[in-house]
Length: 344
Ligand SMILES: [Fe+2]
Ligand SMILES: [Fe+2]
Image (cartoon, rainbow, N blue to C red; front, side, top):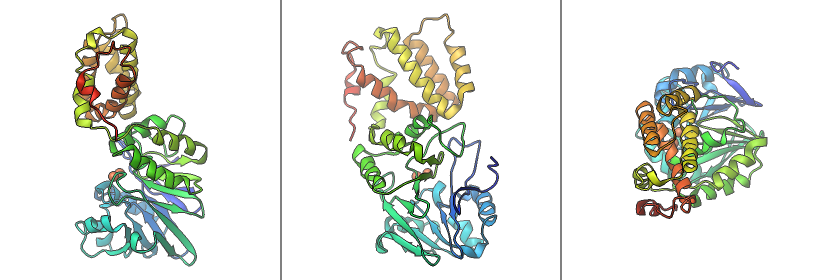
């Protein structure tokens, strides 16, 4: 597949994102092509404007981009609104009023269309329709998703996004781990996650098109819903950080527990750093004939941290979960700070 070009993911719906190999996570933008009126979903960042514009213009002329959806105000989602406006594109910006208030800090002269003042719907292009699904606090107070009923596509913005070193436009069954590693860091609480997923479940969805990560086809949608519904979220990350790798009981931990911990570290580091790099670091830190010990694991984590701090961020939560689930194997000596970790 040629990722340098726009790619049609459903009838008249195009991926116009950027396959930035240097970035930890890819950013997706999408274009819904109408007869006369087209909609650009999450137009992307200032830094990637030229690529996105080129792809958009390969599908429709400038004058046809009548609407731009800004699912929330993050720079990766919609800072490209500024150069799009300066470049003479004339469009209505679709947002929630809580997002609109912030978009004005990008550009004062936006022609705003607030979904909460318009019944969470847009009618356009003489008979086409979009529904907007409010997903408050996941991860922004005004965040929302866009549902296109004709092709049953759910543009979910950051929800269902992923950290991936090795990116492909379509998700496969290995997508759960990279997706969880992203969403765990963004989701403020289980209740908030489940509120949004419940709303998605009320729609008939054939394709999920997130703003990061890969497009999810129908056969994997249930798996991904379930993964987010059962995911632990809302951890007080700050507290958690200190604890897992500083547990005073670590030197008393059975070797099989240590190898489970190594497995988690390996899996999550691979998501953001790629298999080759991670295996090399493991090989040079933990020679095969060496017995696994806590100090070797600590050394490994330090090396990974130096190479890629994000890898440490995404392994925190599964490590904490593992420790919490295995308190009995840890001889009941889970340090008090770990016990204080609360999921909301
Ligand atoms: Fe975001
Ligand atoms: Fe994002």
